[in-house]
Length: 364
Image (cartoon, rainbow, N blue to C red; front, side, top):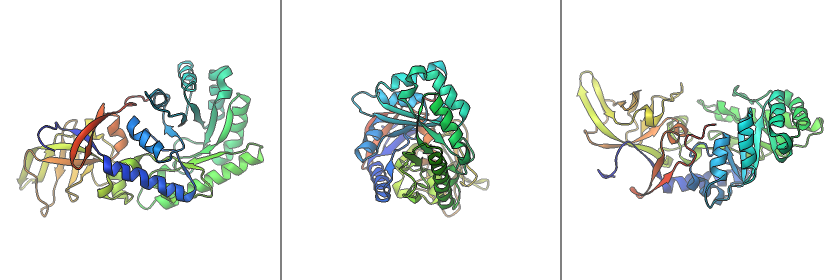
């Protein structure tokens, strides 16, 4: 990709993307688990279309705004949307949710009695049009009620006029070294217990939803009815360092230019024009830098400024010259798509088009 391409630029390798979509769809199909991919990762209509064509049962979103972006996408039929988040509705967001329900079947999360009651009150007569899915904590300790609390929430939701369809969880503690298998076991245990307690209280459970990208392929097909991975379409440096993806499968990179180069007693380093304003600034404790270089696996991004990425190289690694184009793998790909209006699409190393990030900024 020569000088006709300005940097930094987010580029999606369409062939790798298609392969990743097919791989996850096939893996979950073999387990008898429906795939409901989380589109907050990419926020792109064209990619969601590929996922539904590969057999996705619907889409997962994180916000009412994302639901709007996909429900109202021109010429598309994304008609089954799950907002996998314990919404605290306001008058405004409830009105927006009711409008989305004119275009698609919409369900959303609750994780408290107060949240269920508030949702019912805000939705009013429209409450019966919505299914709610109770979020349980399976070990990530973010949102989600302990499984023992699901029956009380289900009763409150029913009293508020909402229909309870099941339970969901996010095994986010799968993002850690050697944590995917334990997290998948925790997920199955929490969903199994929540299901049993709801059944004992007279609430039938149709949906048991879980899955993160690191743990999705390890999900228990005897427990989960659907899984919601998101990052799998692209991969990122977190997945690379966790051993959940190979560099050859990473489908999104940020093309950057070497603007400075130093090979002296103070160190061997380059500086790229891709800073935190395009890579994001996430750096979990288990990763070795602020991102990786796809073609220089021994290098590490050791510092980020808004428009600079400092990359250190070991003595044995070649040091790129100024003006070189470098493919950067961000740590957390989801944040990258919320920072750009469009991405370039490449096939065979050539840019062949662009995709708009339709749900960029739709964070409420």
